[in-house]
Image 1 (cartoon, rainbow, N blue to C red):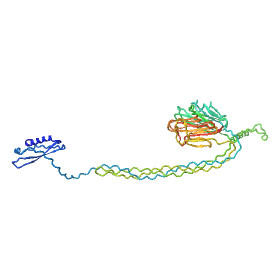
Image 2: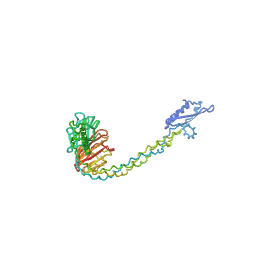
Image 3: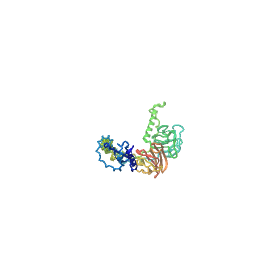
Image 4: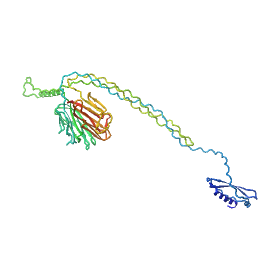
Length: 545
């Protein structure tokens, strides 16, 4: 660059270094050519811009037209004022349509139509059983009979474990908890021998040892099987069995084993028996008649060869008759049970169906900017509601009609009613402490005059005598052990025990005497399952003392 143009450029370059906050200088030149003889003059104006512009036009290409320009170019003028803001330009052309907007937001959940009403609930359960009919009138008085009530009865227990020398050998016992006078039970061989013909009840409860897999227990009469109990599981488990069987004088009953039993001073293994009733005089006469018929038949088919006159010879003497037994106790027969109550009324209609399913989503937004939120969707009608809940239980049945009059009773001045009860649980039970009394919620039966406190599960004796007690209690799936102890005046009689992670039952029984005011209850350790009467307690008076 040379001449005045170069000077101007250098001048402006110096000025640009002085200005504040100005990064660049843009020089715009306007060249105007004058007539010949004149020089080409350069009219300059410059404008200062911010950093956003970086253009700087050099003026090195502008040359003077003649040497006369050297004397015509003056010194640079002062920087001019910024020009005024130009008018706003006209609007630009309309832009192209925007791209398709995103899908609108999902519409709010549709509100379906209510589902159809569920079908009518199932009929209610039958009404409660009608109340017991009125007892029939007392039977007519009969002839006086003897009141001998004592009868054979026993309960034997083991205090230690026992393994028989071979399969199905008798189970031996260590101790007789009770044995009525005249009862023949031999501890050394485990045999009961009948001394009074009649109908007997026998029950056993034996616990398997933990180190064997199977335990078979047989109740046997005269060496023949009557009933069998079996347990086949790991751990400690109890097996029980019972039977009512007739016995003649000299018949023997015992318990036989295949496997090993466990027992301690808690009496986990026991054997109980008692006479339910004597054979009646009718049975004795039938037996005697059969014996006489047998003797007559023998004489008829085997005549004496030395006998010469059948018409004049006296026959052999008859067999002495069997002594008659004591008269039966007279009593009126209790009237039959009242009819069942009528069925309950139809249950209430089922509940309203569930809310309908979600509605469909809103339509996609239109083209253009981001779509606006979709309008609320309109749901389809809801599906049919589920079946209604079963109806409520029917109303209590009407009271049953009184039973018909009792039949005429046989002669006796003895009292025939006796203490008896059966109590059950209808819910599960967790004892507040170890061996706390097991309460019961319902008495299925309680004879008049029987005192049984359901709150603490305790029976209180009001009639001194020999009593029979039996229990069956189911363990819940919680825990592994369940112990049930039958206690008299809080003293241990027998124990039921089960050790398993699943529900299992423990049961046992015993016969023993009670005096007026003595108390009997069950003590529990573990969780008891009570619904559907899985757990029960029964007791009754065998005879007075």
